[in-house]
Image (tube, rainbow, N blue to C red; front, side, top):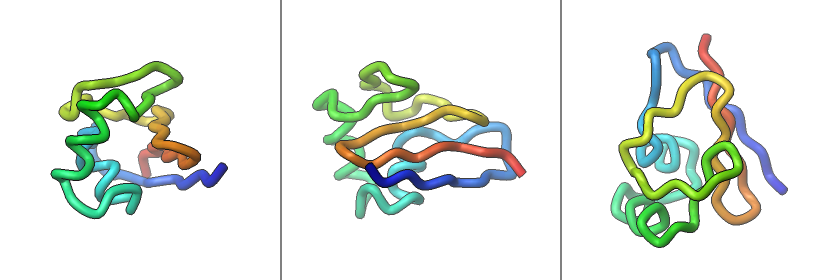
Length: 72
């Protein structure tokens, strides 16, 4: 399993943007499809909300890849 840590200087980042920014998805459209198909987990649960606000210590998983959000 590959785990990335993304540091943000805002209160939150939207799930769709996080997937794109972290490199797990190449485009926002691709992220949208993964999320709508139920392929993305947030904190261990399936998440189908692409606008989900990801805050510090939240973890998104797509396949064998994980992304954790940390604030700076």
